[in-house]
Length: 413
Ligand code: LRH
Ligand code: MN
Image (cartoon, rainbow, N blue to C red; front, top):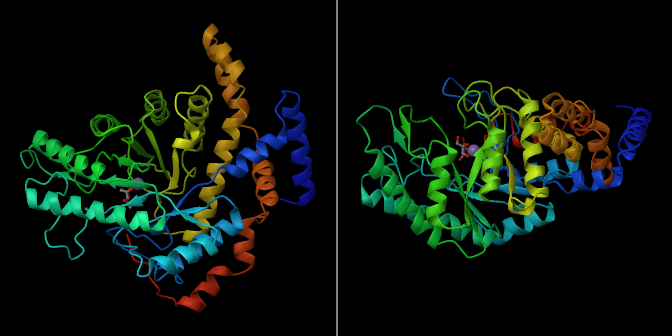
């Protein structure tokens, strides 16, 4: 986008929204303030069970992961935190890692525990972890989560994300109620082990890696468990963790209505938990989700500050850093479009049953080209006007390959 075109677009938007009493500076500061955490495990090539194609120059350790997120923060000014996964990211030297992160301008968002893999622990999680029929294995999984909290406390994190792969592949394999009871009691011990200013983000997923039942398959089961734990336990919405055609924006509205939305794992999908780039498949759904978020916060259903924003994606064919630059842009654009919704007019249409009018209000905002707004907010925050073009023109991937090697591989998925 040329700078003259950029300025013309900004002037047009100022005029368009100035007439509605929306001042462009307030839009720019809102967009600039909206920061999204990046997962430590999305900096390398993910791969599937059918194969993994390395990208070269991937971070080989936690320090290099922080460097990559620091680069994203510098170019996009849209991220200021990393979400770590244990044991993939156990810091060897906590003080050194904290200094490194601070020097790169990034903090530590929610920590992620891992009881869905065997990584040398005494008892296998093959048949489950917090829900396992064997109390010793449940105890081991609880201990792991308490260790993750200790690491998080030392780094300054304020949250623990628990996602359970626990479930079964065949009818009869699991006792549904005992598995749920075991999970409840295990989570109660973990919740009791959390500092008073921490929150527990309980992630649900309908299937994979288990394909008959999953102990926490949907928002309702997660919400029931969170209610039993306490008000610092809330439901984490991973956009890819829904059966086809699920109305996710309604789930978001329902959770905000109950002040039970913990936050998001942003990504996109066509079929299953595809972990594709956010906004690359269903940008209108992402916009509608932000419409519910802004409405829910403005109408005081749940405080905006209480919600966590994270990406959770996996890259098979794209350069991970280019993918994350695109995802951060797509999220900022969806947010900016949702801020532009004329909520007063929408409420009027809803009260008068003007169905057509209501759609017109949403489409007016969704079809507004906000790229100049997001770009201007980035420029004013000291970021690159066009991070992707800069990343390519500076040949950053090539430089990473020279520095780290062609087959450098990150720990994680
Ligand atoms: C599970 C999940 C979870 C992470 C993992 C990397 O599908 O979304 O959030 O722990 O991906
Ligand atoms: Mn996730």
